[in-house]
Length: 145
Image (cartoon, rainbow, N blue to C red; front, side, top):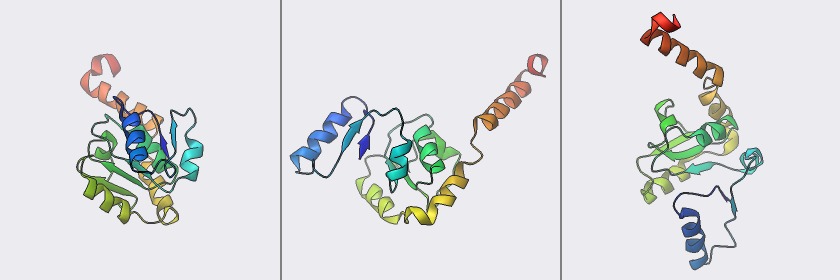
């Protein structure tokens, strides 16, 4: 299942690629979704081969839902997380062999769901707000002290 719209025509390109290879009946393209919780619940893993993502909220959401994730080091959230059986990292999104290898290395969701959730348990809005306040206080104690 592919959800989202991709960028710069990538969803259309993926759909055309699947159709040209006779795979359109095996791949569902659902487009943009407002509530992705149902998709996380039915998924075996998240595969997110991004060329650039300043944070990668979808990765954090998937891990919090107990999913194992395959993504690239270009996702900003990977700076906060260590690779593990629940999080397989590939250097670049165009490394097809690396992505295939990482997908094959992912254990069954049930074996890593607690690890996935634990990886992001500290990445809360409250923790982010506290870190931002501490940073502002360190930079400008005269204003934020």
